[in-house]
Image (tube, rainbow, N blue to C red; front, side, top):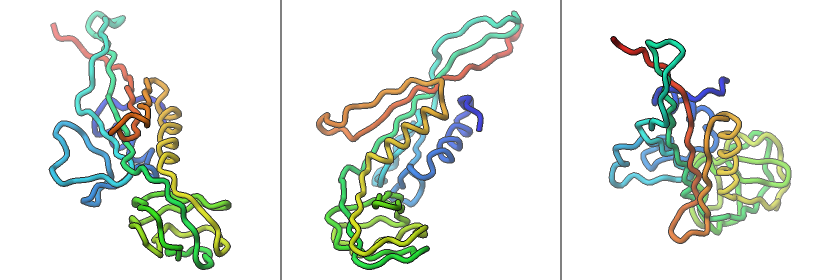
Length: 207
């Protein structure tokens, strides 16, 4: 995979959707939670988990003449924001033995909600939900469990783990960027990280 920043909106969106397929949440209409703005999201659409917001138009940083007098080089950047709409840390206790490749596990009644794609970490394995789970749920739909888990093992869903994973992958994939992490303690603000992804573009000048 190349580490250059895509110059087109279509390629940028596809790159992010591929890179962060495990972390990106889901809109209430069932689509991956990646939104290009403008326009704003339609009324009534909500997000479950992490939303990726891409600002449609790249910003011009600076422009300079190229070696060839018939060309110019512009330094541009994309604005991107990742926002975590899941905020509850939810303890999960397995209520029955889990077999290899199980896609549904029985748990003690949940004390909170876990979004689709939410990852639960147990002592020896991690599982992701294929459907959201509500308060008091006693079974979870998950991706095929790769190994057995002993009955009664305690696990934890921590939504910030996926945001940490987004940060790690973005730093590795896009070295030419600026990152800003918004403090999660601010009143009324969901945990979020913003990025400026830089790219250069050569333009042929007309005479």
